Length: 103
Picture (spheres, rainbow, N blue to C red):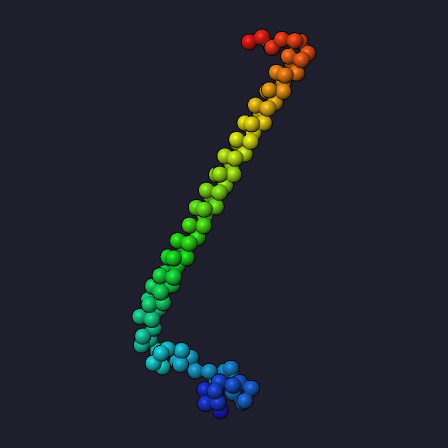
C-alpha cells in the first residue's frame, strides 16, 4: 500500500521508503515551477525582513539614546560631587586656619 493512498499513515502499512519525491513540486513534475516559486519565497522573505530590521534598528536607537542619557546624568552627578568636596575642603581649611587658602 502506498502512503499517499492511506493518507500518508506509515503505521497503517506504509513505510518511509515508499515516499515519492516527485510529489514535492506543485504539479508533480520535477523542475516545472520550482525556480519561480523559490524566487517568490526569497522576495517574500526579504519583504518580511525589511520591517523586522527597521524595528530592530529603531529599538537599538532608543537604547543607545537611553545609554547616552544615563552617561550624561552620571557625569553631572560626578561634577556635583566634585563641587561638594571642594566646598567641604574650603570650609575645613577656613575652620582650621581662620582664613581662606591662598590663590
